[in-house]
Image (cartoon, rainbow, N blue to C red; front, side, top):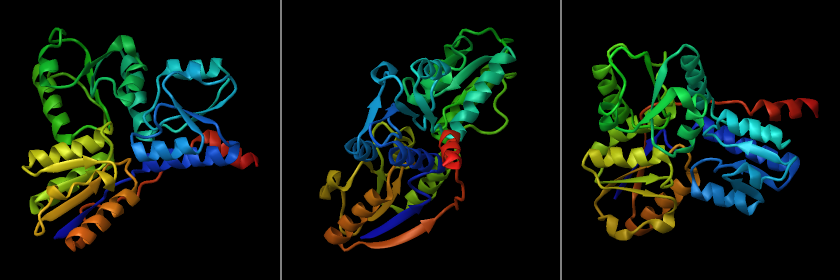
Length: 312
């Protein structure tokens, strides 16, 4: 057996920043630390923090007044920020800067009188937060059928934005459909789909052709991880999305297979290495690391934590 380890894989700069923020908050304030939604969409990471006294909530009314609250990497709506302020919570904003960019674009387009079409997945934390920036100006589309059903007359002043973790190919199909129907529609100055999402998809697209099986480390509620598995399947490869090595099944593999292993942007590297060790132990697999694109992006800790560090 041969393993191809895809690079880049795993943590992106936004996830690194969010996890480091929660670690710093735990060290500085001690438990309990409250987090609005999951810090990142990865079950092993959430379970690890929960065991250390982090409380994940979907309703700020569950957070005692005056507590320390951290906003997850996926961002929140202005209404949530106002509620946190009203409840006197010490809010640490660990929103990924690339998500913040989309929020700012939504505010700008709304201010300029556009109706905004957001391309994304209904109910995703990032989509909920983005739509909260201008709910009366924004409508969500998930596919081309939604585009065809849009009620706007041809000359409506329209703009589009996208969720950052979409499939590049899927988003392009929907954007093309929007432009066909509304040729005057405007979009962001720079692609909203995040660099890490694009790079991980590019690595799978390039390397999957050599593989018999594709393993994606990531959680079922991780949009970017789901997209990696879908991309591999669209290339005709059996692909399995798993959280950890205990979910592996030996019947997925043959001794002579080439296995491509990658990981979504919120999946820890130790879970990748556990799967590598499993395939080495069971199939004598040889490992080859392949780099498709270099990444050198990093984001600073939220200003709330930087200010505290300066003060101390």
